[in-house]
Length: 276
Image 1: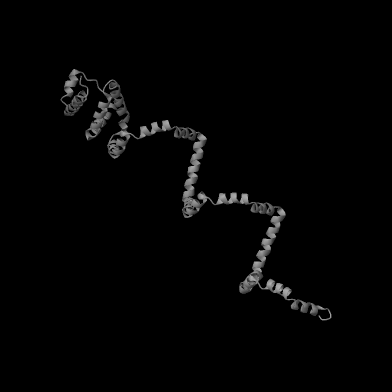
Image 2: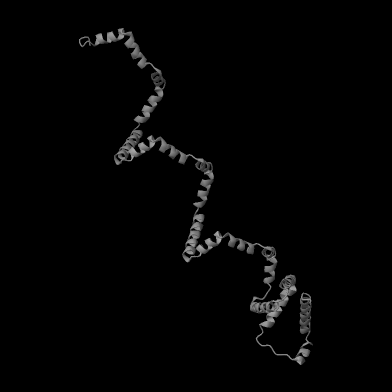
């Protein structure tokens, strides 16, 4: 070293207090002191990087970055990251009231997704979607959508569905179905004939009074019996004509006498609603 003159150079540096101060200032500063204090952590970090699996992962990551750079994807991404205006737009789209509200409801969303992915729910959804497809093919959905958008028409429909009559019908539904179950449905067409006949006779009468009368009569079990009896009589295929003599003879029959009494009572009550 003496032959090379290095010792003289070193002695010169050590004797030059100003230069030596610069060297010591460069070596001994906050960064180097922090580095010395964190030496244990640095050795641990080096051990981590020296691990075979970590090194393989780093190599894979570097290889991936190299491929991305070769494909030209990295440069636009770097450009976006360096563009403060564009980045602020991206951050504004990600971090806003709606996104924060969504994050706050994350647990509910997870529960909903869990319910929707249930096998039974998925099967039901598929069935509903299939039904909607079939309805759409038939063209039924278009008029339904038109009706739903027409507020005036919807108001008329709601008015027809929700009124005193329908509410009264719903409140008495159990009683109505119970009474209807007692009617012999094999006579149904004859009941319709009877109702049509009565309707023709009431066209110019007091319709509402008649309806009120029917409502009152319909509450009684006798009404059901009456309708059943009339139905049985009307469905008879052969009816023997009866003259005055036959009528007088029939009046001896106790059943005819009872029936005549019922008819007279009906006529009396009906007449009370048509006072001149």
